View 1 (cartoon, rainbow, N blue to C red):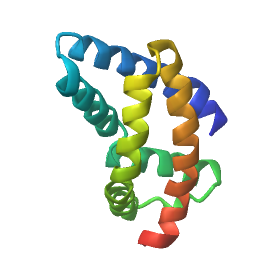
View 2: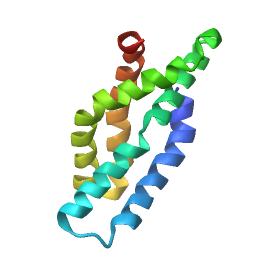
View 3: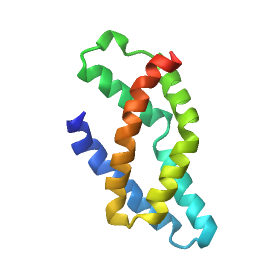
View 4: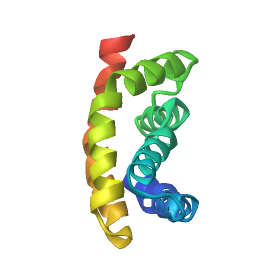
Length: 124
């Protein structure tokens, strides 16, 4: 998972955060704040969570456990996590400078990665 974080996620996430800044630079005040927050939440969507769960299964050699149930688990993980994710992404997108957003996001989503892995037990 460290390899995935250092390659895929390290490339994708900062680029997406740059895109959020460009997409919202003309917006003002509350509209900009909410748009940044919502766009960040939408990036870490059920398909992203499913991909993360897939990586976990593959790295632990649980090839037989790779199935479409991962999508349902990812959907429930996403929905249940929205209130927490909203607050965290609000802080990350609106209080952190752009150069620190990836680190803030990495720390938050390192914690949620544990939550996503636990959700397999909770939501399956």
